[in-house]
Amino acid sequence: MRVCFIGLERNQSRWNKALAHLELLESPECFVAIRPKEPLFLNDEAFPVEPGQVQFCMACGVDAHEFLTVYEDTLDVEYVERHLDCKVYRGWAVTDEFDVARISPETAIQAAPHDIEFVNGTALLETDEKAQMAASKYGLHVYLAYENWFRGVWHKRFVDKYVGYFMRHMTLGECGSSLAHLRVLERQVADRIPIQFVFEDDARPVVDFLDPVLAKIEALDAIGERWDLILLHSVKYDLIPEQESRVDGLFIAGHRKVTDAYCMSLRGAQKICRSGYRYCLFPFDDFLPALYSHHPRKDLALLPCIANIKEFKAYTFPDDANMSIISEESLVSGNNVSPCLFGDHGVT
Image (cartoon, rainbow, N blue to C red; front, side, top):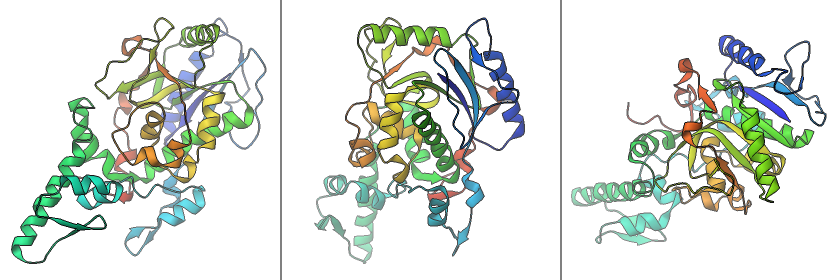
C-alpha cells in the first residue's frame, strides 16, 4: 500500500508543510510504515512495498512552466508536448459559438434562428449590416444552448464560473497538474501497488484516515464488489442525489470535482494508464468524473480515453465524513491563472 503526496508547485514552504503533515500520519500505533532515513521521493527508481506495509512518499510534480516558450506571440504548445511526452486535447477550450460548433455541430444547427442556413454544418452568414445582426443573434443562441448543457444538471452556483472560466482554457499549470496525477498512477502500475492513496500537497487528511477507508475496502471485497476509485474529499456538482452502496457509509459517486484526496485500486490505475489519456490531455478534475458519471460536455464521451474505459466504479464518503480538508492558505489554485496553452481566462 502506498500513501503519496504530490508536490504540485515548486514552493518549498508548501512542500515542507506537506512533509510535516506526512510525518504525523506515520504513527506506528496505527500501522506499520516504511521509514527511510530521508523523505522518500518517487522518481525513476522502483520502490517495492512488502505485503502489510504502508509506504509514504512525496512525488515531485510536473512543472510545465519549465518549457514555457513563445513563438510568434503565442505559446509553443508543441514544444511543451514534446518535452512532456503528451498531447493536449485541442477541443477543450470553449470560448465562443465557433468552439461550440466545432465540438458539437448539431448544437449549433439546432440552436440557430430559422433564417440561418447551413452547408455541411457551417452557418452561411452574409456581410451586410442585417446579416451581421443575424450572426450576432446566432452566436448568442448557440452559446446559450451550450450553457444549457450544464444548467439543470449541475448545481447553479457552479455553472457560471465553470462554463465562463474553467472551461475556457487549458493552462500550463493544469497541464502539469494533470500529468503529475497521471505519473503517480503510472508508477502505481509499474510498482504493482494494490492500493494507493493520493493527496495533493495542500490536502490535510485526518490522522486516522486509513482505518475507515480500509474497512470499507474490506467490506466491498467481502461482498464481491469490485472498485476502482474511492473519493476521500471532493465537491459534488450534479443535482442527482447519490445512491447508497451496499456498504454502509459509502455512496456511489456522482459527478464530483476538486479531487485532491482519493484512493485508487491497481485495477483503476491500469484502466487510466491504458486509456490513452496522456495523449488526449485535458484537466484531470474533468477526466476523472467523466469515467464514472455523466459529464455535460458532449464531446468528452467520444474521446478514446473515455470511450475505451467501459466500466469504472467510483465510490465516495459522504461530505460530512471529513476524511481530508484543504489547507486554508491554499484555497485558491494557481493553475488556472498560469499562461494559457489554449483559450483565455474569460472576462475578469
